[in-house]
Length: 343
Length: 200
Image 1 (cartoon, chains in turn yellow, purple):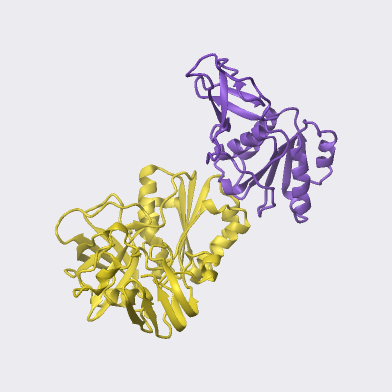
Image 2 (cartoon, chains in turn red, cyan):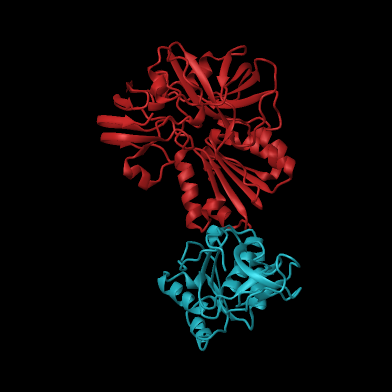
């Protein structure tokens, strides 16, 4: 059955002549206007979004992200970016974007083409990386641009007067975003480590001397996050105390075809497209939240599979992946003869 | 008389060693045997980083304290009763750091109080292991007068606070470390059934 629940049309609707009017399974998108673009570092730009209709934006909580829709000719890209502005502020949102010249083009488009006055659609905020307020203390560890969700969280921590400290690792001082602002506002609660000076987060010592009830939050490059979480688990930190956010960019790969059983369509996924992108391009409104393999919202049942599903997400359990009955189309791909999904 | 399938009814599992540099092992009565099993499953360095707090008692208690003392833990403290053992645990937790693991084994009322102390100290359930051994006796909080009756072995039980005859339910509070007891004859006073030793 269509994953939209009661709001979704019956399966037969897919054969109706006007496929454009597909039922909405997403919350209404927010129309925003870019009102400020700031060069933070040579590689990082900050964008301010204000509602195009002048109304207030929805409130959010520290750690939330929005999906930014970027239309460039025929190509529609949707990338998740963490909100960094104070969560109490609903007149505008800000995000910071690091240009990734090896990526699929979303950050390059934002850097090159988006200027004040540009209109965009964004999703309402979704928080997959919230503060656990049961914690007695919050230990925040970030690498590079992974600082952005913590900027919003630290504003909340400061207002709540909660115990927290930030450990931020950057390549070099001049390339690090918001270092001066963080030190000025939070003083001794901020610890910055610069790779080019040979400084490294003293992780073992840090993890060994935290009071009971401390929770660890990690956001940064994949290798750094794996190192920190594995070290914490080996030091006896229970899973409930560990929080991390990692958005995967959808992997590229060989093109393939997928049959969508509910819609009655067979679609082609190109080399640089995700399966979810291709499903949407075919006019099918599939559910999603993070588009980065983290949240599970786009999970789809596999009806038949002759070949290999390339599971790239970190949502499905190892058993689910091995069963071959589920797939996360936002990041996963397929190799083989035929794949049929319940979509 | 017990309503089955109440979700708050704790579920226990055999103790397994977990990673960490500091292990607090708190047991009473036949729980000593679970600690011996735990030590047998652990690697060499585990006991050197462990402190055992033990309260002897129960039908098979004889000699368990000397057996635990001989395991080679960094410390093994034998306590005269449950209350001072819990107090010693709370003292240790007050200065403990993240990565500390708590293991508890023994009677259900005792391990409930160990878990309560660990949660009070800020620990997450993932750092607490509990294995039930020995008596099924329960701590019961009366929903009417809030008094906690210890060592309850019968159904119904008599509240130590208000004297009501209580139906002991599977409804459990981790925060209080006690099962819930409700008046058994509230609707028809004087109709309470005879007490039976169901939690012995």
